[in-house]
Image (cartoon, rainbow, N blue to C red; front, side, top):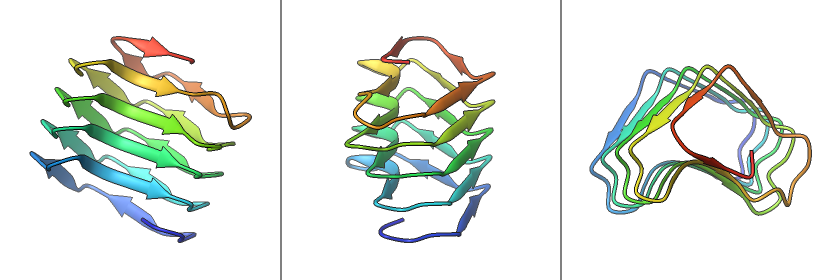
Length: 114
């Protein structure tokens, strides 16, 4: 999703991609529900300059970098009931350059900045 708004991504699978399974780039008010991003070389889900998105019930297992990677002024995103484990670096990472990202009832094996 690039420079988009008000879209929905539901029940998709992104597996064994060269870098990232799902990217939300400079997008707002997107809804990601029940997606799977497993065994990607880099990231499961990446949020870059992404604001006011709702991310619910997604799974990121065994990715080469991070499961959920939130950075570069991503703000006011709501992450609920997501799962991430067995990523090479960290399962859920927030670089905290944005403001107000909210993480509720997730199951992350490792975190940084959350």
